[in-house]
Length: 398
Image 1 (tube, one colour):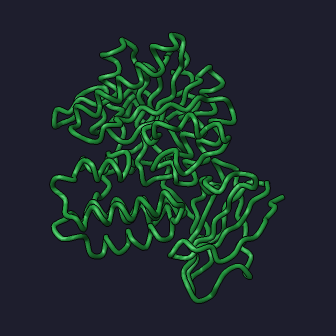
Image 2 (cartoon, rainbow, N blue to C red; image 1 turned 120 degrees about the vertical axis):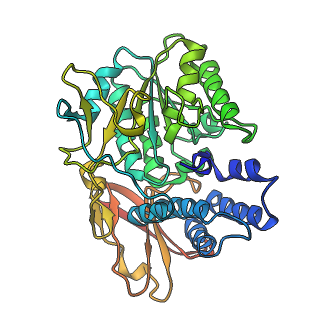
């Protein structure tokens, strides 16, 4: 995978590429970041669409495929996010499993394996909210086993102070602006996790420098301060590797083990399977050991395979099956019929800087997508491409 997709935030991209980038490129990224930081998700989507159609002079279209994938995922278009990312990085599913390997339900298997570990590291693909829904389920189960720290790649340095507000806010990080990630944070705080930032703060330089700094931050901010700490670390892509990749890069998980002597339980969930699955599963060999396949063989402890994403009314079914949400119609009288809009469901009582609980894009002439909500009280906000709020409405879901 290209290095660009592993950056923690668009700000880091700007810093890392500033010397080689054009003014136009930096301006595009700055405008995108400003829109996301302001909660103007539809404006960011429109900008990402434009940059993908016509990248800035001399810039890589593949990079903007990633940006478009992020933008679509943030507004509830998980299928479109996969399509955008796949246009630049086609999936290479694992096609089969050895005869001596069996499937086992993933969350329970991981929790049992984690009982004797101090650190669990799970990765994600940054354009796939389904991975965050799985991380939410795992985080709740690990909390029951004494895990008390939730360290996420996306977190910015002030996350602990923002957590005092009691809800996920836009200022916590970049990827955490996505609603399912926001709900992962909301639930982590609800059950008592302490939020820990560990990303390199000085700006991107090299893979080695970034990975080393991440490992040092985890060691100094948690493991040295609390000798009994049990930490759930949530990272992107290859940070989870415990052995060098094909290019010889040494990633955060391996560096953390070498710095601390603590052997983390490392889990990859970014590979797709082209073989039948009984659910979200891990693989075990006949001797009971975990088995990882493909390029992750010998580099992670555990590999999770999820079933293909399926949809109902344009929304992924795992929102219902994994998170207990149900479809809720958007009130017709708040939808203008002449323009594309974003309909947001915000948890009632949370601040104006809160990450939405869910949101969908509605377009004239297209089937109306439903919000996916749990019972509770919400504030609906309808936003246009400039970020202007066109309508507000209270909503109670029983």
